[in-house]
Image 1: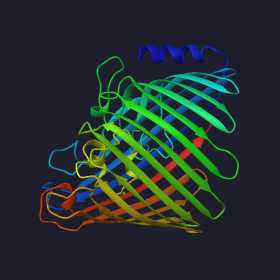
Image 2 (image 1 turned 180 degrees about the vertical axis):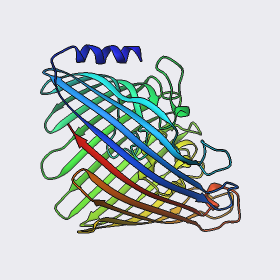
Image 3 (image 1 turned 180 degrees about the horizontal axis):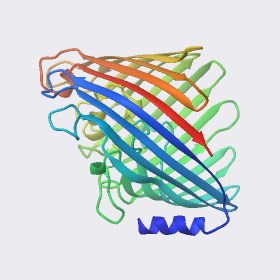
Image 4 (image 1 turned 45 degrees about the horizontal axis):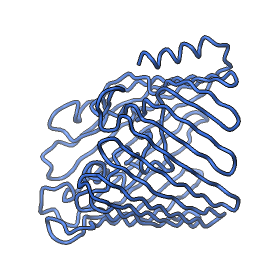
Length: 375
């Protein structure tokens, strides 16, 4: 951290033109699962984030300080015996980095968010009150229509302190190289190839191909992984089609293919029934067949999603059916700098005759507001 502070102080010492912003997000969250032996969780938390960025060609810096406060603590890890909500009282510099930027090149060092594509493999987890960031160095080189990104992850700063590591120590993701090459030619096409060597965990390589038109869009993503929980080769296949406000697609993770650094709440249903499973074990694999409809009206934006979950390998309870899920989201911009949101998710298992995670009926509900402005 001393190295990061030195970077910031050096940057501030220059005559930088700067801007900044403030974000305040209070949120109520309810979580419960049947037959898990835990009390339903009720959490009232807030995120307060202050950021500042300055640039004096070709040097710049960015600083973000995030505070998370717990106002209602009926949840684990705040209290034993309750369902888990991944929040806790914290104050952390979530971003603190300096950079050198020219027309084609950017060099960055410090702490910052790392987002790969739609964050299926590495993301910022900004849905939680404390985002996931990394102590890292990075290089970006771009010349339209292509871009090359290279990261070296020194340490992870997770959404909970228990998930964080310090640079220099032996952590599961410390000293991990990440490479991405992307190409966006004309005609709405997009291609990217990526490689991740997550130290002591897995090696993953893959490619993404997409085409986006005015009404119709097509996407395909394929990756192979060595290591994981079994040490063998495994794969991930994703494909989806978007026609106006409607999206239909599937995701297939073979057994032992894991994504521990992803923004997992964005995938496999908002009830998070499979979040820990795909992050750490994925013993039986996962099929996720889904359809989503988005409606935009004067009353805000509404999203409805349906999921059907199956395993790739036969389950201990017999068969390959996990369950199904219904997700609902509504957001409304109340004022220029103030918005409101509601989200609910209900996971219904195909069978409840076991004590495994996929046999538990799960319900989650959120109510929040976001106040953000720049200065």
